[in-house]
Image (cartoon, rainbow, N blue to C red; front, side, top):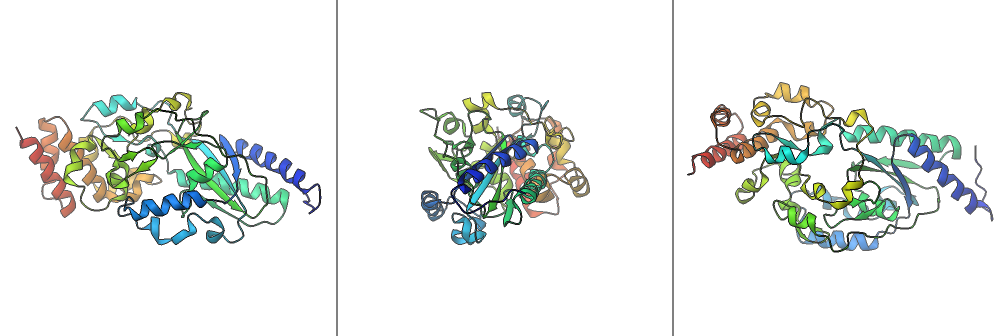
Length: 360
């Protein structure tokens, strides 16, 4: 066991230990590991401004935790450092995303959701990394997070030198693009912090220009209320009428801003079998998915991030996509089959879709 003595050599000891932590993290399947301090003052100011503008929509959880999101030591008392990790998720051998988006009869699902629920995969690996640290450093306080608590993961990852916040607000890396998940370990170990990463977006605005709903209202500013990921995942009620035609065939999330990003030329396919596309979801007809009853939905999506939105919201999203699909008998038959759906929410969106096909 490494003994960290509080003397002149302790800084050197911690620096060497930080390097070993990064080696252990890579051995566990993380592509990048970095360490940051907890000074998030600038990020806190931006968060408060974003909330004041109402850009979080119905995501009340973004505000209800107060400042714990931007003050790690208030969320986990004693936190001195945050170990941030990233894990590539782009599924190998998945159908080309642009081809699916251009075929209005097919369902587009955000690439991160084609496989197993990433929360479970990352949490398991983070726990293993934390336990490895404990075997070497002795007892220490820690808590792991995988998008499961009020954590400013992009800001922390940027401070840990894993990348920079792109104009679409996602983290970007020169080595990995943006097709990766983030996770964190909050710890009271006084490890040396890495230097924050520099921004390399330059004058590029492709992500802003491609956004189907113009949700990126300015560089580094996202109005979630217009974002397709918010509309199809976070929003529980009716999708605003003006935005429905803009959603196209995107039934769970949206990847357009990542698909056009030049930095994703350097992204890598995932090495994790858990992130491979399941049930043919990378290339599947809308009508096929719309026919799934709740039992099939639960069976297919057990262990998937999609499971959490529920069958009703799933049908709502597909109804919108069917309304945007090319008109044919198969589409109309599928919609007619759910005109009397028990859910008022589903019926409303089915009626809208049918009306779209009645339009000249």
